[in-house]
Length: 113
Image (cartoon, rainbow, N blue to C red):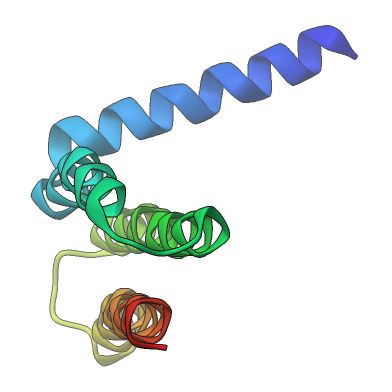
């Protein structure tokens, strides 16, 4: 069981590394984290709100990982224009955008109220 957990962790780290190396948007979202931590440090709000704000932001790279996986899988299926594959890629991209809007609303709510 320990071996299975270790292998799962190893595969996950490999996926994060591969996505970081190949996907600009994922790299950008991960590289923003230190700046967000710095900004959170200067905000005069409770530690709980800061944790909520950080946790919600971490959803963005998570959804980006799924988006990247869907895009790579779709590209592997066919390189020809296909309406169903276009829909899948657009929907995955829209999920990232909705997540970013969600994070923005949470951050505004935590800072404003």
